[in-house]
Amino acid sequence: MIIQHNMTAMNANRNLGTTTKKLAKSTEKLSSGYKINRAGDNAAGLAISEKMRGQIRGLDQASTNAEDGISLIQTAEGALTETHSIIHRMRELAVQASSDTNTEDDRSQIQNEIDQLTQEVDRIANTTEFNTKKLLNGDRKGAVDQKEGTNKIEGTFSNSLVKVDTTSSELKFSKESDVIRIELNRDADSEGKVGAAGSGYTVKSLHGASANVTITSEGIKVGKAQLALVSDNKIYVSAANGETDAIVAISNATNMKAGDVITITLGECRSTESAPTGKDALRLQIGANAGQEVKLGINAMTTQALDIADKTTGKALDVSSQMGASMAIEAYDMAIQKVSTERAKLGATQNRLEHTIANLDTSSENLQAAESSLRDTDMAEEMTKFSKENILMQAGQSMLAQANQSTQGVMSLLQ
Image (cartoon, rainbow, N blue to C red; front, side, top):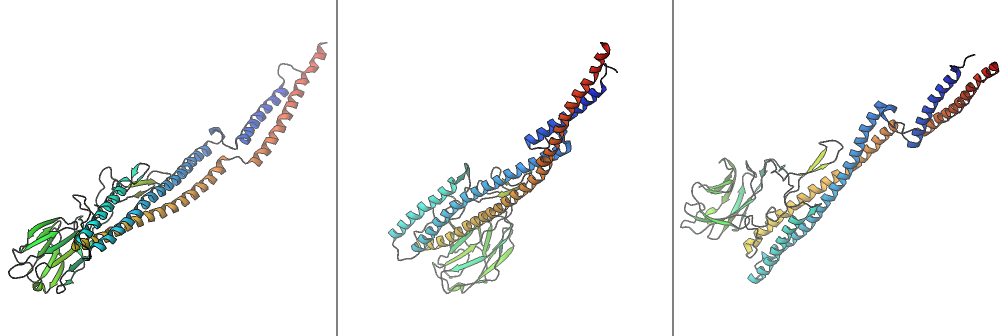
């Protein structure tokens, strides 16, 4: 019988300490709801779980970003709805002004309203904002995403004796060009021939800016397009490099009289170009990781960008004459089409973002389920362990007390 080392008590105490630690961990898991409360609980599981948490929070924020993007689009589209309404009214006024039943005073009053409506379109374009970001002034148009293409040629004539025969329906440009509307107002000449050297012509742009030119055998150069009149009564239009791309044939050209008008409309053709610094497209982060974004370019919706105001002066289209009002109708038609195209693009992006939100929410939910299986405590299983460790602790305490009493017999030997 020894008293220096009570091995029974030491063994009971060791087991009691182990049980106490296990009971403490089980209590922590039950109280926190997590089976991984520190790296020591499951080092690999913690690393995987934290990475998943980063993805989950990123997906949730991306969903919020997409919702904000929809709000931005709705703001821009709502403003364009009113722009559409205004341009329709301007076109209605132009149709009214194009009739010679109006007096000069009537057209003057119509012009006043068009001037005010033109200013309102610009005000909407320059002041429409979302979170202080301007949306319709062209700052966020991004790179032009249209590739080089072809454009139809339209020929219109005011003399019923003159007809147009378009032998080619395409006009090619090598670089970006604005829409060009060209009027060739032929002055009287001695022979009455179209394209005779020395004949006086006035070339007008879509906005009414004019320049007096002289037709020569080399033709007329307007903007990036080259117009030339040849002896066989054909007008050919070519790109800046001089190659002929289309021919518009004029029949009965010698029957034209002074004051007759030939109008050639060249469609717009754009080529891909980089966005200027600071005018890049909007980037909507719609994913949890870098680069998962949607680019949204919103073109300028000002009157100059829509070609319903002079690009130099900013003045509204002139409807004070029948010819000016007639030209304005076509200009407003093109503007309506541009606004429609922009609204359609915004609507398509909004639909895309709505699907994006649904996908992000589903992905986040599934990822949370995976993270839960790694991190969350199975309460039923852990409660079973807790009950076992609690009973073991009580038993260990009882056995430690019994072991400590075993050495009391030594006192009887010392009496």
